[in-house]
Length: 281
Image (cartoon, rainbow, N blue to C red; front, side, top):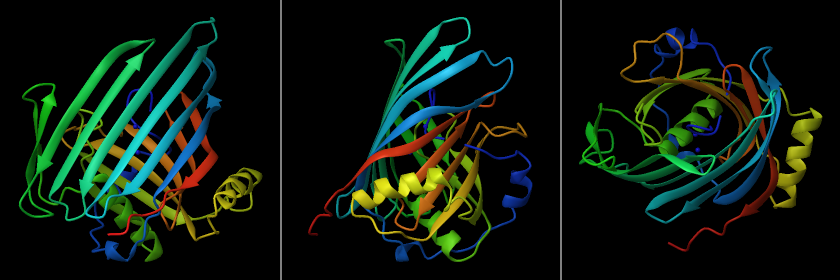
């Protein structure tokens, strides 16, 4: 999964990097069984700082995740409307699609970002490498001839998600990896995560979300709260580019998402979930 200008979403301190960079566990991600699914999340304003100018927000995110036998494919479409105190309204649409080989050797991506009907960013490209953990180059066709160097050990998004879930199941509290998703030119990112127990399980918000998941035929599963900070790999800034908080089930389905934009915070909760039948490989 990017935000009005990037990706879906959340919460954490820049100081996290100091402890997360010391963790280097080998995680058996092959044991994680992700659920192919399609989920519609409703977006709402959780809070706004005094002076932010943000008076309201509403929108939706449609996310789909598919298993293509030898690869994973995902697509995210975000529509967000921000209402400002002086009456101005800004509408943002953001779409992202990726294809990731399960052997970790190839990856394709594209994004399109518009604001008030005007396209502000188009990105498209591929990564190919001879080994799953080898250094590589992300070759862009949009913008033409753009190249981003990826260091050895860089993960693609789905493999990172599997490692993250496996880390939580293994009791690893702090987890750090370099990840490339192609969703912005700030890639790759050092993603530093703190994984904690599911403290929100009994809250009305979590229970309402679980009802949506149950309606889709999803039984209750162990869930961890993951708080992530995204640091651009080549940046020297002590603060993250953005932060994201997700309640992840063991099958990779997000029960709740929270995006912190700095001076305002947006919640995403499932409105509907549909299970996608996995292919017969």
